[in-house]
Length: 315
Image (cartoon, rainbow, N blue to C red; front, side, top):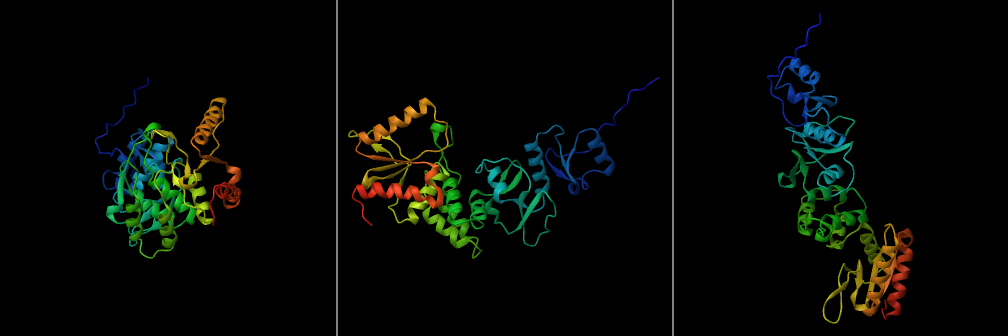
């Protein structure tokens, strides 16, 4: 005769987030830990790390791992991992995770972690999913001082970009030029600060794509006039007609960057109509594609400069 197997009821407390074995050892016995894992109250996600969600997807397991690695440790999620949690970089959350430890704190020795050492000011830490994360401004400094000038500029434009309501985006930008400057000043004389400061001088609000930023940067390097970002062309009655990516208002030159979008017949019709409206207002439209952007935008600069010279611009 078989007998029903009875499970021992759980009378020990478990957190509703990712947790480390170090923290669990202060809460429950090893016997209770084995019981929790056996009964799917805790699911192992890495050595010494557990999730309270046995059937969690990959993203939720990664969030639980970050909760377990940071709770009560003084550590903070930083760099690209912070940018992903802050929804500033649209990439999957996956290891190795970037985690910053205070200078006097113990280093994280794990294959799923890329460790950094820095004393992040408390004012530069925010919470996401119960995880301490560097603020948007401090996250930008982490990425900017470790990258090139142009990539620091691309990220600055992205981080200060107000959302477009017509795209269903929140209107408030993640951060501001002032907040980026303040965070950068807190980095002192760290390597890369000077290039990051140069990027801030070139950053502009309202940029919609990295390629628009790169094109503007290439124009700056070529000593061309600085373009206005996403300004409107108006008709004689002051009504908005066309909004080019970049424009040189003095020379009535509208610059459009055509990305890798699928050009259906409808999209091509819209592009032709945009060009017609632009030129009906007395403007010239210059269309740039990725083929113009190689070699620091050499062909794009040649194309824009030719049109500028035709409209009376002189070096």
